[in-house]
Length: 354
Image (cartoon, helix red, strand yellow):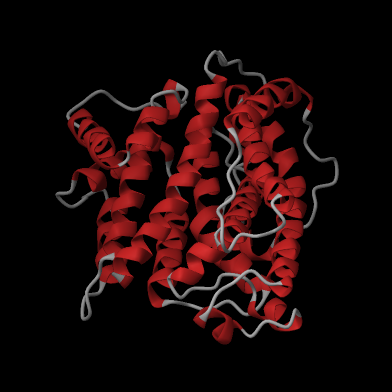
């Protein structure tokens, strides 16, 4: 069983906690309600990811933040982290959980794509982007929670991609204000929208609504495909992840109720509705079953999951019992983590354009 060792490394973890208090109050408050066995690891992981994101977003011409981050990861995985508290804390996570490096490499690559203003012509291109900025997070959280087999990691990555597609559908207007389009450009052209022309005067149109609806349909497909993977998670995590999935999926449902206008408004799910979904997840989690015939995984996420063939890790959780006294709060952490990632993405681009 993986456990953090009480030693001098505690100071680095506390420094990461302080970092979260100062810059990520929502995340920090919710993270304290995670199951204790993964709470510190999650904070350490998130602290490094936050710093990496900022380093790429705030890079000046002539700087090479990706090279810097790769050097820092080299040192972390060599067991000689640089003198940054987040690096030293992440080194603990790497050692204790044997966290595969390619998860973090993928996330950093996604940050780089944002910074470079990469364009996405096909839905497969959007899948590739979402796999890096969100599928990688799903994989890392799944790994830390316990299951490390390929099939469960695939479902976790697909859930992350589904959530990112929901984010993209919801934030069309916010992205356009920063000169960015994440909707598949081929879909836009098929719907009669010329991307570069539309960006000069972004307004809600029938064509934009058609593409947003298509993207939500693709997200729904992936939510359904990912759901059986929740049954393979440790019992104390299942309700939380199911609720996060249901709440994020509800954003798409609400967006449809709002007439698919994600240009002039940003869709939110009401607190009342979230509470209903929390209660529903509490009861439904016990009935979720793994798929008898696993579906073909999304091609974009296979590079994340196929490195890992450790099927024993998943089995060790199957008969375990973990008290589930704080499920709503744990749901808040999972939900807020993804909300924060999306908000920071938008805010980071605003800094670049200000």
